[in-house]
Image (cartoon, rainbow, N blue to C red; front, side, top):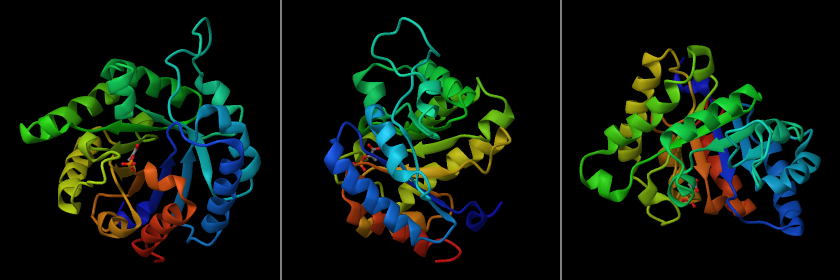
Length: 258
Ligand code: PEP
């Protein structure tokens, strides 16, 4: 499948931000803006799991899909504070970020745990957005491909080719997240090409590959024009409707219809 045929996907990661009133305004604005985008640009938001019902009530019937930022490695049981993937699908959610670097770093999530969470998300019918990315130290040590390759391999090892084909993978260099310092388009494309080859070897060449890390309205288009960048996972800029929609429009400018 060609880059054009894959279309574009832009997903907001709200992280632990938002309150009921502010969410309403943001979700309504995103839904309205998404209505004006070409059909080959898909838009999603991953909200704090507590607000998934609010996302459902405000986004149902709009082209925007919604989801959460993590799921439990278990389906149910005595796991206080956890949210299971089937609970999330009860609210019409279709997306679940897994393995975000903040969870790997602050919650000590291992590559093995991320792989299990990916399986739970897939079993529940969610699309897992599997995040991979290297630290600055790893990049400077020439270890980028080794690190992101190992993170992806751990997940792929647990999946059939059919399951792997249902993933979305997000390359998010840790040093670019929330720092205002995005990877250059060339740096991002190089890693995406590497990930694409790895996925192709598993029969999953068409998995959407998102770039994440300080994507803003002014750098989105250049990033999205790269051959193997199929869209973005957007943190800070997804909290402002105007910025998020400008990034979605940049995706539209690089899509077939754009
Ligand atoms: C993220 O948290 O997934 C992210 C990409 O954050 P930011 O866009 O703020 O760098």
